Image (cartoon, rainbow, N blue to C red; front, side):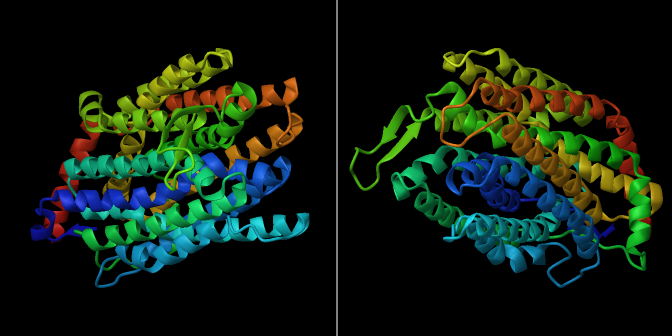
Length: 473
């Protein structure tokens, strides 16, 4: 890639930073909805067996993961007057919103029909999720060539991401109850419709407010296979790939059973903490223990995101990421030793774990922009879309592993939806909520230690790249 000097020197305004963050706000309205509630919806509302859901996650997410590099290669080869990556936000926003809603349409079908419908809608949504999120992620690498701008964009991105996640954790259970009463089917449908509309609007906002300043390199007729060959020689990318698998597997396993953990192990998931409005009024919302646990954790996460830039500068992006990830893993494992009646202690440990994890996503994606720069510096070929789609491929593989483990372990432990659980099934839920995700987080932290681009090497690489771009301009 090259940069036009006038564009490269443009200062990013607050509107563009917020606009870019709006895209991950839109994305996480669905990602967090599915991470926290879809497994519960499939097992306890839609009536699918946990093992069937786990197998579906394996098949659907694996197929979807394969699509990510294909989408990245496609995005790298598209060029319009609006840019390479921005147009995908315009083209895909509406189908993204509609297909997410379709998952919760709940048609009146038999057991086989429901499973077929779940497969169809889940796979279709995952494909459109790839089609919009791969270009969105790559967009951060071409909005600006400046390190400080990219770190700032990453921070705004994840403030948006976890702002969306906070709304999901805070409002889904109260809105399901508000719209559906005791009928969770109706409640989930109406709630998803609300968030579906919001997701469309915020993706379009990103399209309108952002610009691409890093222009494509000229005369680069490189095949997809050559791009892939260069990518697998990119050592920093390989390390980030392995770390991403661990990260998302951890997130998927823990998220899948979060509702089950409170509903069946803690046992006070529906206990009211506070309410808005008066019972029986038109706008009465009830916030229970599970909702407050999830939403307070997300607030701590958002607070942690705000420290991303400071920690990245103070410790270096790699070192900060490794330290925070290892500490977060230990905090998650600590949940296993908390008795079910110690709810206040659970809240405290959860706040600590999320505060530690908060800065990590912005640090990760800022590192990926360095990985894309490394490919250009090392091999003379910049394939931003492929780098970011490869990252999403790793994340999808992590989600595949985590979702599959969740379904199979829950099924093998003897879980029966909406019944009192056996000691074995309760132990299965606790292992998935505490030990497995904690161990994966620790492994992730160890892997990050081997990431080779420290601060000094990154700064020297950027200086050389700037000279190369100026000579090519």
